[in-house]
Length: 345
Image (tube, rainbow, N blue to C red):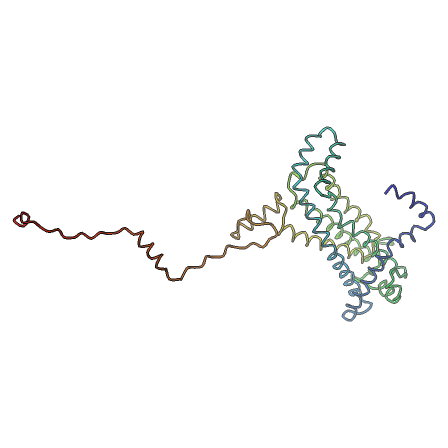
């Protein structure tokens, strides 16, 4: 990043910051506006062109499309998280070896991650990759509130910009924000409720992994401290910034967090990381259902052994002969011929 500063600094002086930011996000403006317009055409015949329900459902559909596209990244995140747990014994050995040299400990730990192909920041990728989309949607909604079309699909349809700006949900416009604070009215009430929902779901979705899908020994060390810091840092950032977010953007991020919680619940329940509380609960469920957890791989569909079919075929002559040979033989005694001496008796 530092090597790019000499190139970026002159450009920043020539191009206004807002124009530079718009140029950087223009592909996402195009994609977000296109998805919103497409979803609007799908829901408008049902709820009306200018209905707040139509635009809210359009935002929710945008959320579903984006989160579906991020599923491969989520799978990669889960794999990286598991690999991190596997490496914990080696990390603890490094912590003991370099207990008095934090710089060397950091270097050796990162070398271990690199050699094993593990990225310790993979858990942050879903949030970080959503941030450009988040800002693109912010610009689209904020532009609509000012009567400005952002995104080519809205530029070509200026009537939809006015429709989006005036659409209401919960009695307030989806383009309204908590600030500026001109009294405490319905806009502030709705915005505050959504901000709290956004902050709470952000915290819960991150806490969900740490509480259930991480072994106790992984909760110590410098990497665990960084994760705990991020656990509280992200909600604070969104809570402070939420006062400037449009209502529609708060709906988007809250819905995205709910998706994350459901997605993580499914993975933690069906494919937990070994050595975690979630894995112990999974073992108990498998045992209660009559399966042996040691023979199952988390995430695989358990199968019981097929009952052995009874042999209804007729036994062969060889089998009969074998069975007969196993039975004890009773030898018949022949009558003895009596002599004259025995007959006289």
